[in-house]
Image 1 (cartoon, rainbow, N blue to C red):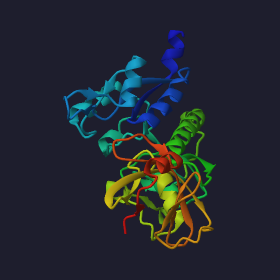
Image 2: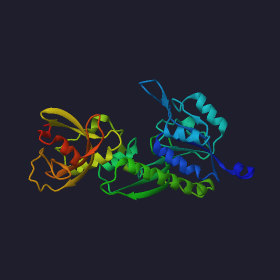
Image 3: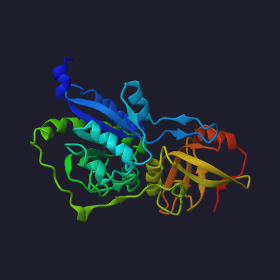
Image 4: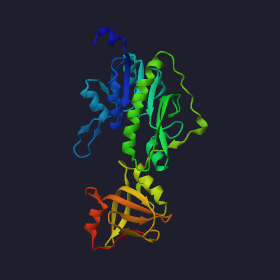
Length: 324
């Protein structure tokens, strides 16, 4: 690549942390003919409580592999961090699941502003868990939005948006990968017109905004008085982290079991609410709407996930029921 080509590229700072953000960064790095990622910003490396070792984030790791400098400030409000960014004079900042609040002092630095890849059809699902809350609510479609970062969370004008249809089986980790990949491609597709001043960002309808609150670990317990569909959606939504679980009785001893995969079926077994039964390949629990939540995969504490069929073989001859 010639010096002239390099000199004409827009200077980009990328901010992101988890694996889905690394996926987005990989895609953006494929467009080096007009974008030059001069810096990556990620959350500080995770410190092991066992031996004190530090593990850099997936985005941090990818940047090091590609020879891109990395900053990991505790806060984006750090004056030294902001001063260093100003000296770099970036044309554009791109964020993807960065995880830290960006103050106005930061947003004022890049010439073309800061664009965020957000995995929802904004103004729906503003907040920390848009994909999880969307699946939990049983939505039939979602999408990804490219928006300008402003002081209020996920409230900036939208540069581009793309819908994605949902089925009743997809889980959060898979959907997150899909949406961040689509989002990165949508962003780079929109950038040439944006840099040329030919884009018309659309202000969000703030009256239609909904929240996607951060998931709390205590939400992971399944309440079988709810409908089978609601529980199935929760299993899909909380897949990855924090997962879903319930307390069962095995020979009258309480045992916490993680529920990995499920489906919903009609109650052809005549079960009453709260009763369970093993069929050939599933553990079926009768839920509050008298439909069955068929558990296909589950996991005992400290063990690997197994099929319900294998689990059934392991508890054969033992008393096994839901903890009421």
